[in-house]
Length: 167
Image (cartoon, one colour):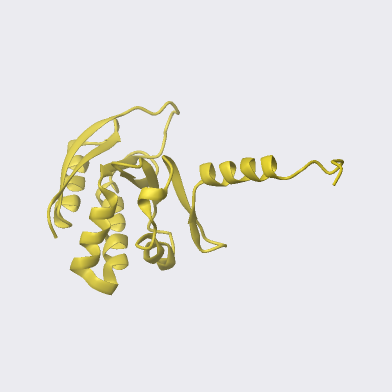
């Protein structure tokens, strides 16, 4: 896989050892990570955070080219390895977030997600996603954005005539 550069932000509570472990994990999948542990959270003991800003389509395509039909397992392994890299943290476990450098869609990943979530991530049209969080709905078996749902509902309301309107 062609090496990809990424700007990775971690919470201020990350130790030097955790930062180095996260750097190694990304390096193992061909990502050159520049890491800053500068993310400030306002609660007393917030969950840790690893957010990587990268060209998400190129990253997923590279994983797919390298691992073939097992690409989703490689991605899930990356998420598990990042969680393991933060295992010594005094903070509760958090999420890994992959943010697309162009659309700024933020894909929240957890090792607890089903394999289906990781498989379907490779089918997402990342460029069409709005900026902001994108989550996997386990019941519906699909990735979604609250922002897209909100915009669709707003549009539907605009197009639906009031019930008391005359035909």
